[in-house]
Image (cartoon, rainbow, N blue to C red; front, side):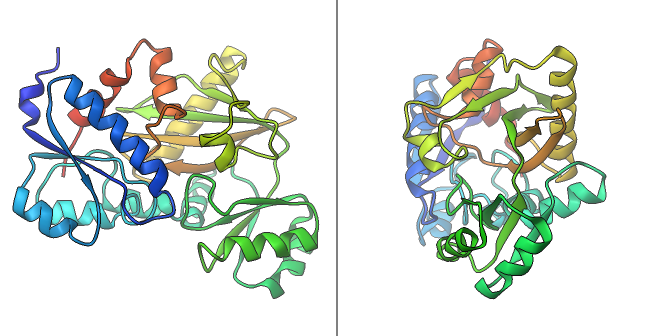
Length: 305
């Protein structure tokens, strides 16, 4: 049994001003409802420019971070909380900053020999032709510092890559372009140093985009994930190594592709994954017998600064 009184007064941070605000509001509402239902002395804060002043004035005993994207997942909030010596959920300053930067994450994985798709950085439309020549097509373009598949697009030609760049640059001045991996997509949730059961994602969309994640009703989530036992064990080990390589702690999620030859390729790590009714970490936890409330309490129990 969890002694909820030991948590003290808990602030759940959500909302914010990033492109993922809408998702964060849903995550925060779900987390707050679970904490209150479990008897935790919790309250919500929709984070804005007054957040530092509010935290200094109210001095919560712990913070549950449900802020996705910039300002909540990139190390800046974690640094603020550490300076105030308020324990918080999830990864620390460095791992949060690294995990939010898709390029640095890939460079770390590559340095350790962990498989990830071939890529190039794109900083202007005049660079598109050289990237197509280098990587071929199809490609996928991703803003370097966004999550929830925001600004991502598949490109089957030079013209489509140019169009995709125009869309991506509204979110970031740099984009990561990766070789398209044709095959199955998986996600592996990590909780307290252990990999939860992998989930296979199936969608009629080109890829698991924002609509497929949060809005569509035709996305399929397979758990068990249909992999042979030895391949699922390989996937779990790879995901844990990827998570630890970035320096993550507490909880998170690693996204992986498997090509048609059965090889796995790391895509990205998420240090504050979604906690909505469509979200994947709660789904994986449920497969182990954990309720949503159990999961939220386990994450909160690991809060540190």
